[in-house]
Length: 435
Image (tube, rainbow, N blue to C red; front, top):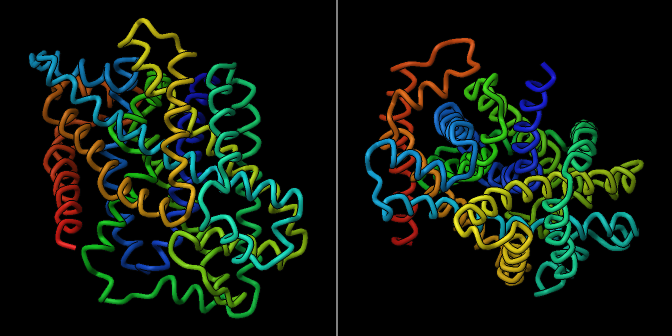
């Protein structure tokens, strides 16, 4: 029973790491602010479909092969009698998507680490939030040291015993949620907060357009860490007693809850504190220090809040690295885990250096959300539902499940989830090409 609870907790912690570090704390609120109720509806629809069928299948494949993404793709093609090596190399594409996400992820974690240090020293509160943020966010290489520290901690954690790190993490996450709730409730009690809520949940027919729909799709993939590779590695650590569909639904609820609560905190703050020069990708970084500066015990809350985000983000980054490193070590057989980690860390850092300004980072992450991640997820979707034998997938999905998933679940995945993922991925490229 203890082993079952540990596996369940590990998946939720991996998902939370992604949600806290980027997807729902940073990305969700500013897209919600822009798209209103239309964005929320699109997100929930896509996320539900992607979680129940895409995430559960990806996790199941990881558990089936007890390894990383490359092994899962090779197994699928081999079992289908399509053992051509060129076809099996398709698994490198989702793995590359995970690598490029890690590049952007590490860059934004550098911002979070700077926020933690600034809260600790008090520098965050010596000037207005927008002046403090843009003093480094619009200038290249202003967070390079923080960036390097993030990479170094990730490598050391990956090389060392992660049990102690995970134990600390178990206590850090409840603290984060308590602070998140405190901030959301505190903002709700301030004058004009209702204007922010009304703006958030506004329904505007003009928002029912392709851009809002695509942002809902991209945010859903990213929130669930669904890239065709990352959650395969996570699934390899989950026991046979776990229901992958149940865990995927829990992850969906968990991530969505984080995003909505963060939005309830951040978006009304614009009206409450008359925040200017904040919008889009900068919203979180200007709104948060403003809130902390205007509430009791704000500095203490800021220290714990930023620490929690950094900690959660590093855990997610460690898992991204693990998926890539495990596949590389198995394939090369000549490089040690330490060597691969050092090469990977250096590559992520060097590529990420050019993303340290908020404008470059925003442009890069939009490409990740709308194109790279969906490509990886779509390749995984086609492989699990069209290449792999149906009975093999269903057998793995039904391990640990309290109900039996059969033809209905499989057909919805094959004839709804996969086409939706492919059509939306292609549509995103068409829209980018047109505009």
